[in-house]
Amino acid sequence: MRRLTSWLDGIQQFPKVIIVSHGLTGRILQGVYAGLNKEEALKLEVSQDVLFKLTNKEISRICSNIEDD
Image 1: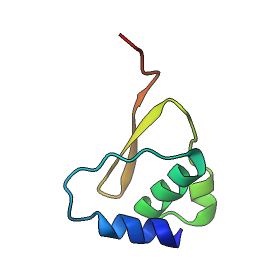
Image 2: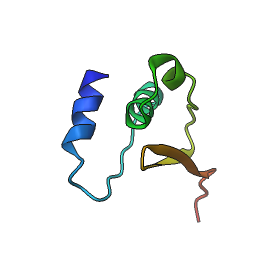
Image 3: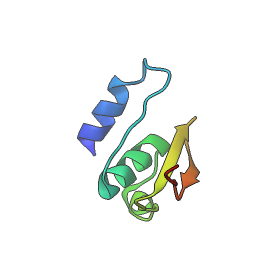
Image 4: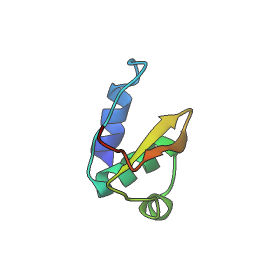
């Protein structure tokens, strides 16, 4: 959690960042970003085919079931 908090602080100067992570790391990252406690963060969705948008301390599910053309 400390490492992800530090990392998030370090990217604040960038207007947009794309992050790819594993499930548990994604949960922790979203929780830190949104200011959730540990129990709330561990209840967040973990899915292999979902994109989340983190904006203004809020988490939005923006895409799932990505299809190849």
